[in-house]
Image (tube, rainbow, N blue to C red):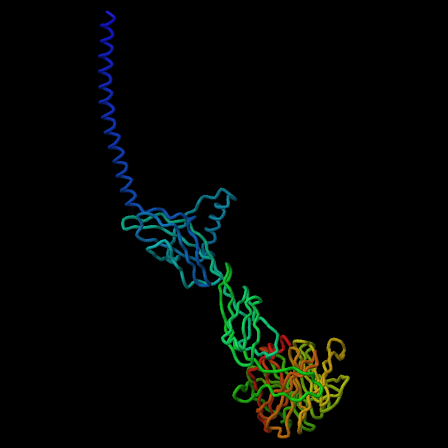
Length: 497
C-alpha cells in the first residue's frame, strides 16, 4: 500500500516538472521576445531622437575681445547643432530667474527660455563653434540644441560667457635715448609687457630683467607685447627708438660736442604765426597744452599773442609794463602764469592769460632766457655765464646752478626751455638765420650732454609739447614765422640720465 502511494506521488511530481519545464520554456520565449522588442524600440528611439546637450558641458576654451569659442559634449544621433546667441543684458530678467534657481536662493521654477527672432541663430556640424563680431567686455547668453534629420532635440538652458576687455599699451610712438642712458622699460598696460628689438647693435633686451639696454647709436624698432589673461586680450605695439651718441661732461667750460642736426628733413611745421600792432619779431615761446603764447618785440610796441594749438584762434594782449626786448618767455603750469625777461636782467615780468594782468618778480641771477620744466616743476633761466633752476613752490629759491659751454666765435643767448630734467639753451650764431644751436644740460647733476645744430632760421625759443617732443620757434625775418616740431622725444631722453 505504501509503495503504491509513493508511485502516485512520483508520477504527480514528474507530471508537474514537465509542466513547469513547458511553462518556463514558454515564458523564456515571451521574455526574450519582449526584451528583443524593447531593444529594437530603444535602438529605434536612439536613432530617431538626438541626444540631449547638457548645459553643464558648455564651456569656453577661447575668448577674445570680439569672439567667444563655445564647446560642449557631443551627443548621439546628431547631424547638426543649433546655437542661439544674445546679449546677456537683454535676457537678464529671465537669466536672473535661472541664476536664482541654480544658487538655491529660492523656489523659482526652472524656466526654459525659448529663443525667438531676437536671438542670433547659428549652426555647426561639430560640438564647438566660434561666435564672432561681438562687443568687447560684454556677457552673452548661449543656448545649444542637438538635431537630426528626423527630430529636433531639447535646447539647453542659457549659459553665460563674457568677451575680454581691450587693452592698450600707453607709450609714445617715438622715443629718444642717449648711448649712455640707463636700462629702461617702455609703456604701460593692464598685463605684463615683453620687448623685442629689431637691431641688437642699437638696443637689446635683457632676458633676466626684461629691460632694454642701449648698445650703440642708431635706430631700432622696439616691439612691445602685452600678455593675454582671463580678463584682457593680448596686444602689441611698435615704437621707433633713436639713440643719440653722447658723453656727458662737467658743464662749466666744456667744449661743444655736436650730437644731432635738425633741419626740414626731420622737422615739420606745426604752426605758422604772425605779429600784430607793429610788433612783428617773435622773441620767446610759451606752451599751455592748448595754446602757444609768444612774446613779440622789437622796441616799444610789445605784444603777447596767444595762438590755439589746433585751429586758427588768436588773441592779442598789450603789456601794461615796458618789457623792452622780451627775449625770454615761458608758461608755468604750476600756477598758470607766464614769465618774461628782457636781455640780461634779474627782473621777470609776469603775465596771467586768464585775467590779462601783469606784474613782476625778482630772481637771484640775471638772465636772458627763461623756461619751465613741467615734469620737474622747475623754472630755468639761461645767460652767458650760468643756467639756474628755481623752485616756484618755494619762493623761487635756487635749486640748481650749472656752468655753460664756451662756444667759439660769436653766439647770442636767446631763450631756453626744459623738460624731464634737461635744460635746453637756445643760441644763434653770427649769421642768425644760418646755423643755430641748442645746448643740452642735465641740471641736477651739472652735466653738459651735447649740442643740437639747427638749420631752421633763427632759433628764438623752444618748448616740449604734451607728447614729449621738442618744438622750436624760428624767426624768419618776416611777418610770417614758424613753430617746428622735431622728431626728438625729450620726455624719454631725460629718463635714465
